[in-house]
Structure formats: C-alpha cells, structure tokens
Image (cartoon, rainbow, N blue to C red; front, side, top):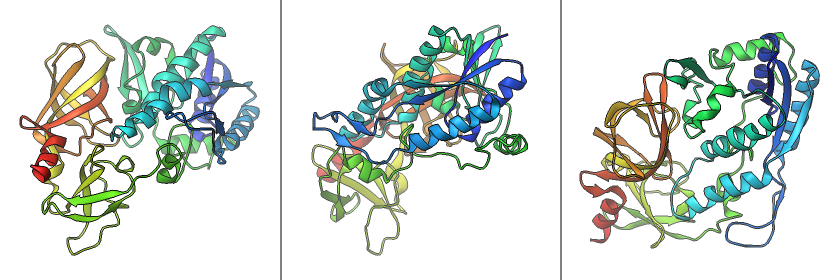
Length: 380
C-alpha cells in the first residue's frame, strides 16, 4: 500500500483530496504547514521586530484537526517559517521595492509545498505527496507531465509552473479530474467539517488582508504625483508606487471628467505613477517580453509556437517563444496583449500540457522597452 502525505490546509479542497485518496486505497497521513509567524524578527530592510496580530493559520489548523479526526487520519504539524521568509516573503518585498508585481503563490509552491514539504515527506518514508490543486499529472512516452485541471474555472497549473519537474513522479492531484461543484458535493455528502467553508484568498499562507496596510508594515508609504500620460500633468497623489500594478483601476482616488483611470506605468526612482483614461488603453499594450528563470516542465525545442498566460485566469494567448540568451527567453505576440506586467509569471502551454514558466522581466512595444516608452513620452 502506498503511503501518501497530504498537505491539509483546513480548506475543503485539501480535505476532499485526503478523502479521495483514502477511498482509492492509499495509506493517508496529513500534515499542516505552519509558514507564517505572528511575530517575525526583522523585515528585509533590517527594521526591528514587526508584530502581526492577525493569525488566520490557527483557525485553519483547528479546521484541519477537525477534518483529520473526521477521516480518522493522523495530522502532523510541520514548521517552514524560516524557509517561507527566506525564499518567498523576502522576494515578495524586494520585488515590490523594485516597483514590480510578484506572485508569492508561485514561489510558495516552488519552495515550500513542492520543495521543503516534499523533502520532509520523503525523509519520513512517504512514497507520495498530495495537495488539493486543480491540475493533472499524466505519464506517457515523454515521462511525467503537468496538465491543466479539467475545471477551467479552477485550473491551477499556472501556479505550479515553477515546481521541480522531478517531483511530478511522486505527486498526486486527485482533484484534477473534478470541478469545484463536485468537490463541494462530496464534502457535503461525507459530512466533512469544512464542507461549506469559503475558499481562501489573499497572499499564500498569510490570508486575506488589507493589502496596502499589510505591505506598509514592510514598505513604508511615500507619497508622490500621479501623472496623466497624455497631458503630462499631475492629476492626483499616490501613497507609494509599489502598492500599484499595471492595469489597476480601483483605489486611484482620481476625480475629473475623464471617467475611469488605470495605471500604465511607474517609476521607482522619481516616485511617479503614470495613468491614462479609459479611452487611452493603447498605453497598456506590448508585443513582446523577456522572461527569466524559465523552468521547463516538458521537452520541446525553441523557437516554438504555443500559448501563454501572463496572469491567472487570463485566456490562452498565441505566442512564439525563443531562446534570447542563456538566461532569458523572448516571447513574441505581434497581435499585442494588454497589461503584461514585470514581476508576474508567464506560463506556457501546448494545449493542456504545461510547458513551464518564468518571470516577466521587461515588456516591449516595437523595439522600445515599454516602461521607458511611457517615461520618455512624459519627460522627453
């Protein structure tokens, strides 16, 4: 009988994951990962201890205990606080300092769930690890491959694009063949304690927060001008360019008669945020980008025509990818795509097969770097 360690988060997806593996005949043990400390030592700038009074993990741990008891399985509690701080959260903060928009959920999967947690499981004699991700793993002549989950609304392969390809052989995603409504139905039918618990959102393992207030603990706000990219005039004030992302429409606090505004660029050095009105979205478009840290999850040759997502839930976009340098991949999309954002992840697909992904470094419009294009238009 295969011994499997399930990451039990206290939510309905991981609970049903554990139940289905039991039903399939696995010897199931669960583990709850503690990755965020309510009193961290220092921020990445070396500032004194910052206390975080919100601790959603403790409630989740109690829910995980209830699920484990209802299924009659052991629940371990493992601590990856240091690994999370060093490999996920420090990167999250440093990327924001650069004015970029990182995705901590992807790093969390790469360094915690499918690295630290995976290594812990294997060291304890477990043959497999499992999580409640909506994705699939298949074995064919090409080896083990990561595929999209069948539920297109819940597919989470995007968040798994940076995991080590070698872990696929010993990883199980039992929810990959199901849609969310089926998972809820199973949980209700089996009287699983968290059957009606709402899905978690927010930063991986930290939970739902007022994002600006939370980030302000680590990156103090610094006010500056919001500049209309067309008129080159200040139209408002921001409280820190690192709090905004390309394409953002909400929370800008700009009045006037131009309707809705959105962010088209930012400059950390000058502390300026650039915006355009709703009729000027041409400023959001690029036709190529450079991607670093490309993590291949399948064998293929470049250049290759495939599809790409530049953010979660985005539709698949036709692209061509080619090797630009040993460290960088060039992604071309001559049809132009809106709001491709440095710091975010570009994930590539061949149909349902996830080819891998990497970090968006720079975007271009023609031969001009997109951010520089906006900046030069304003400042000459």
